[in-house]
Amino acid sequence: MGVDYYAVLELDRGATADDIKKAYRRLALQYHPLKCKEPWGPSRFRQLAEAYDVLSDPMKKGIYDKFGEEGLKGGIPLELASDNPWSVGYVFHNNPEKTFKEFFGGDNPFAEFFAEDGSEVLLPFGGPRGRGALRQDPPVIRDLYVSLEDLFHGCTKKIKISRRVMNEDGQTSTIRDKILTIDVQPGWKRGTRITFEKEGDQGPNVIPADIIFVVQEKLHSRFKRVDNNLIYVASIPLGKALTGCTLDVWTLDGRLLNIPINDIVDPRYCKVVPGEGMPLPQDPQQKGDLLIYFNICFPKSLSPEIKTLLKNALVPE
Image (cartoon, rainbow, N blue to C red; front, side, top):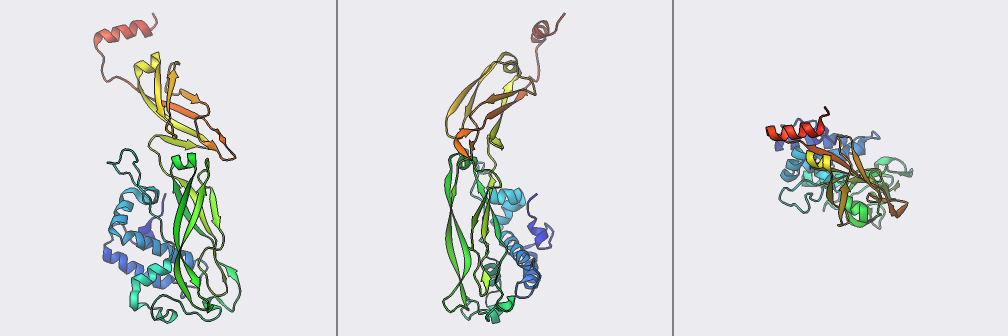
């Protein structure tokens, strides 16, 4: 189950735009790292910012209400786009301080910690964290949704992040964007982790957090992946299930396979096509298998003559 953004803001799904603003204002003030000293405070503050970023935007909110977090982040089905039925997914900018400042504007209740132009943070040596004790922030973990085609071939993903960077004076900082490049390798699986060390927010006496991307697979219109194998479900009429047929299956790399089915297909039958699955991460030249299962379509009605013929052919005396 995905994240419930309404629950994060302590709202029900009937909340209005005004309810969402009021909830974020109250909770963001309560859990801002400059006020909340609990170790889980920064994580809670970030969750609030992401929830508000989604629910305050009518388009994002509409997608989330209909398809949930997976549809929002993994891509939503576009019914008119038959060649590519999935859109680009939502990625949170991961800068809760930016959301906080944009929300409060010049009426920032923590204004004493910001420069007059709103672009920098003024902190005494050691800041609110203590007397200069170095510690690393907990890692920032984000999902990276990748299509099966990209996991089959490999690809390059460029992701823009916004982070706080210390200025030369060692006391003030500025929000700056940076592009992180991920070279997705053929055969990578769900759960593969890519770590960018110390790419999180900078601050006095703070070791920046690592940023970790976790690979998630986008839903596919034809295949489902299980380990290194691909599962395909073919619908065939009962007559072909009994007498045989040839299946046409388009592969992830654009080839058309003509697969003969000579066995009698029962509901438990599986046709294994060796070497037509996903590349093996340790050796992309080797591949898993294509496993074909069948949905047997029975006729809705039969004429008396056909019933007699089938009975004579299939029912022993």
